Amino acid sequence: MRSHGGRLSSTRGVGLFFFAISLVVIVGMAGLAVDLGMLLRTRNEAQRAADGAALAGASAFTDYPPLVYPTPASDTADARARRVAAKNTMVGVPIDGASEVVQVTVCQSAAQSAACDLVMRNSDGTPVAAAGAPIRVLVKIRRAAVPTAFARVFGVTSFPIGATAVAEVALSGGGAKCIVPLAMPDAWTHSPPESGDLIINYSPSNPVTHGGTGFGSNFRNPELDVGLRVQLRTANTSGGTESYSTCTGALNGTGGNKCVTPGWWGLWGATSPVSVTDLNNAFGQTPCLDASIGPTYTLKNGWIGSLENNSGVVSSILSADPSAVWPDGAMEPSGVDPVKYPEWIDSPRVWTVGLFRPTVVPQTSDKEIAFVNFARFFFEGCAGTTGPRAGVLNTNGCNPGDDLIARFIGPAPGSGSGPGTLIRTLRLVK
Image (cartoon, rainbow, N blue to C red; front, side):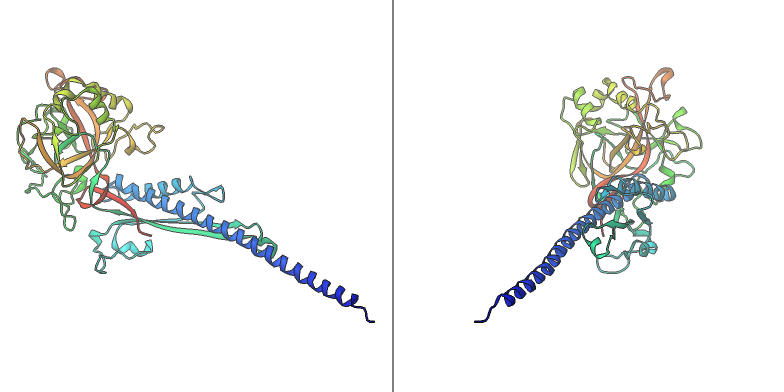
């Protein structure tokens, strides 16, 4: 009788060999799956960082009109993009905003669009004209070596991971958020005419040509308006004409046309009677007031008187950032608290204001108006209306009955599509 013990032992040995080989393969594949999952998560982290950085960089152009600040805006876009990227992590390690954000490119015209990895085209596929091109910011993030856990067994110790994002700033929009309850007529019919004025019948917006004839329009040359002082006279709240006139006295500053005052203006956003709490909440953006181009809003007849009698409302805004001033002839304020407001545009003294068609006829009762644009203004202070304080700017506080003094800044951040040429909206396009 023959024994089968040797054959069985040999078979078991072969089975153990193949089992060992299979186990190594299975463990290796599981390890590679773990590494692959980690790399995909890291890629998603890089993409989120690039998306946020691109939007942050593009947001610089909602604060700084590019036709006035082309270089500062680009510099700020780069700084903002890198700062936001550095707040993100990849595999738990913070992104180095200096070395791992390998590219921040600003494209401000159709001719530059190739540098942002996108050719700017209209909906019908034709190239966008340079004058109508949106602003785009491209951000590329790359970490050269993301370490592996299991693949190093096969000699692969790391993989490079990167991501790209492109954010776009549309040059018009349909609405704005966090607007102060103040409304004034858009420019421009100036009375009396002065040297250098651009007198034309009012046009609210036409982004294809010159952006209308109002504040900050290309027709007027945006540099003409940045820093322009606006005197909101408490006497001009329910009468007068729709035109702007030149301020008198020291408020007019130096160099000619530096200060204008509208024929009338008003406040909106609450029901009468108006309490101090209503006013504080509205100017303090709690809650924020939102508005759009198209719908009608009510200018409240009793608001101005309430504001006059409760001057502490606006005085508290001045005291929130007391050292901020706008030097005559400057293009931006100085002295903004750098600890509270690293970006001066975030100061509570920077207001988003609704502009209505200046052909609206003023009246003494509540008035329905429709906004045609939204812009940012810097709240400079108050000026007296009688006696030795008449026309004298006070940046420290306001007295009952004082005029409000502001400086035109430029575009306001907004949302949606629409004809508002001073509204800047952001979106990711890649």
